Structure formats: structure tokens, C-alpha cells
Image (cartoon, rainbow, N blue to C red; front, side, top):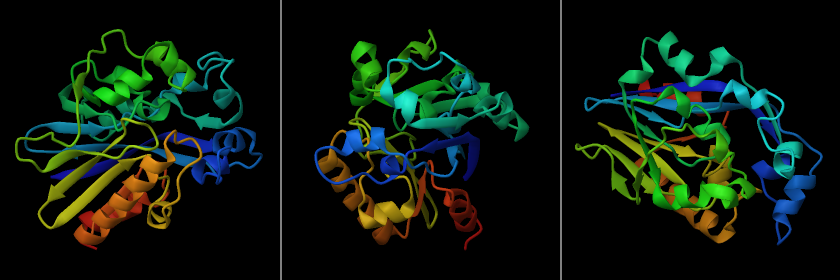
Length: 264
């Protein structure tokens, strides 16, 4: 079994999104923050598994950089995101460049449905799309759009398999969905066990490994208590299993994965 990191462009966000402010005005302080992060990677993951290819998250689409893609009335998209994604950065072309065909992917697991994780869904009409029921219900419809999910851009054919975590995805039980709510209510992380190696594909449970270790909640999580509890469980899992922890936007995630797979 082997895991491949796939970068689908970059995103800059407000510093207060990466590390949230304390107190009840966290979201407002994120929206009004004047400081940007550096461009951060938008990572997706391909797992070569004996039971079939598995993609975790689909990255962003280049269409997201076009005027009018995001609703102009939403303050987050007006103030808090700067995307750089070219057509060749999308996950479909990236997979083909690596010798894989999107049509051969058996499962696509979405850690959550934010745009930079679900934007590449259109490349996988032949795959089984796996999302938690909680996340799908939270993200769909008009309320979902107010919450920041551009769900009008979901593919017309989308008919996901809705699940509850924890859940073993593979019959072998070596790829699992673990509940990691906080950043969103239905957020999951994907754990991969291959011999002595234990990998946590963490989505946006935290923006970096260090922020997970420090227990720092981000600035857009709707449930601070759930996020803190999740970070505590992840910290314990990393310590107990010597796990390789891979958040989507951590510039060091790719290097950590390469070291783990090289035995370093």
C-alpha cells in the first residue's frame, strides 16, 4: 500500500482562520483580520490499496478563481480567501500525470465539503463518493450556502454514500474513517495502517501538525468544544501510534509522508 500527495494549487487565508482568536467573537475577528498567511498547499491524497484506489479529498477546481464562482454576498469569499489553481493543477490532470486514471478510483472519501476539499468532485463520476450524513446535511441547501458551502457547484450526478463514523472503509479494516468534528460538524479524518506505519489524513482538523499538538482551534470552527476534544484525541493517537499526521494545508505534510514511507 502506498499513499501519494497531490497538490491542487494553493490558498491564502487570514491568519485568524489558521489560529482562531479567543472569546465569542472568533468568527468576526477572522472576517476582519488584516493579515494573510503565505500561500498554503491544497492537498488531496491517493491511496493505492489492494481493494482499489482510494482518493481522500478532491482539492479545488480552477473554476473557483473565475469571477462569479463564489457568491458575492458572502463575506468569507469577499474577504478571506485567495486561490491560485490552474486547470492543470486539478486532481484529474494530476492523477493522469502520475499514471492513474480517475475512472479507476473505487472510493472518494471527503473529510468535509468545503470548496477546497470537494471542488474536484467532477473528475469522479464513476467512483463511490463517501461523505458523513452529518456533513452532507449541514452543507446542503440554502443553509449550507450561508454556512460557506458553494453547493450549487456540486455535480448533478452526485449521489453519495452517506455514512456515520467511525467506519472501516476497506474489508481489511486498514483504512478507516474516524470522527474528528470541530472544523465542521461532520468532519472525518482517514487513518491508514500499513504494517508498522500509521498515517492520519487529517483534512482541516488543524491547519498544521504543530497547531494540533498545541491544541489551537481555528477561526472558523463552529464548535470550539468539539474541536478541542478532537485535537486532544488526535494528539493522543499520534503519541500512542507514532502516527504520521497529514493536514491538508500544512506545508510540511508532504515531507512527513515521504519520510514515513521511506522508513525515516
